[in-house]
Image (tube, rainbow, N blue to C red; front, side, top):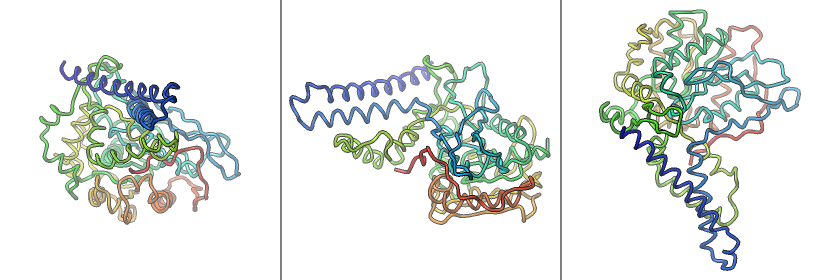
Length: 433
């Protein structure tokens, strides 16, 4: 019960700070303060405005914000987002582009379940939409899922991916970013043994921890240093009374956010100080660079405790995927069973979350796959975010991935070159602070 009280205490603190910000913003901009034109009141109002928005965005799911795509005919085509498969812990959503012929490329973008919503992949989706039909895994916030829906761990996650791949068919091209890379590999291997015809045509793994021990980072060091008992005691709480998932054991989003911010506390403090000064001078905008980044960065979601703990225990500590000793629902998954799915690895030279070598380890596990169906790319100077949504992705990696997809497509009539189109009406996505 104390875990539930702790969860509600964190929500109370968040709500109180949001209220304090709103109060300061209202008081600092109250007409009577104009009688004493002192910069203190402008700073108070600016502080309140930034504070209220910061704490309000922590419990709001961001919108995709992708309104149109420019087609080959030069016209804007409206984009609608619709769930195609709905499950308790996550949906398979499709970005429908109205009024244009269906593209031969069919891409399933597997978004991470690592604290942020799938909208973190907004700029990735934006860059792919002009040239492909795009589906995305849209994971749900665990605090909104009733306890009656049961558990959700990495085995359930893997089975979800297998279901999504089975639904989309063998002419699908899967791109898994960061956390889901080892589980996307496992889901493909699971289908290779259970239902070979349902395997995707290609699998692109971007910056994921296939073998965390291949290259040490702060993330892998933490996984080694902390025991499972300590982790469960420090990180896991019960959802409070405010949400539908009341009583569910979770790793709370607010706790995750605290750890995210602590890693670069000085940079975040400077960013907010500068934003308050800009707001006081009337130079801040609703969709300026600061707000675009923090609207996404501060929007966090709870993870089920079993998913978080099983990820640390089985992926980082026991290295089940790296040792090819992973089981799903009692079935041993053999990565070597993949024989007909082209696999491409993408890593960033300066990735400090999944360092170079961690994802590349997948190619050694693919003992049944011919060398001509294996590919890898190390992006010079790129960090973790850049390899899937930043400048490195847009300028270098995206064209390589699309060429890889076309070279290994099972569908006839795949495009041989990429049309120069762009998506509009969307953010570029968060830019690192």
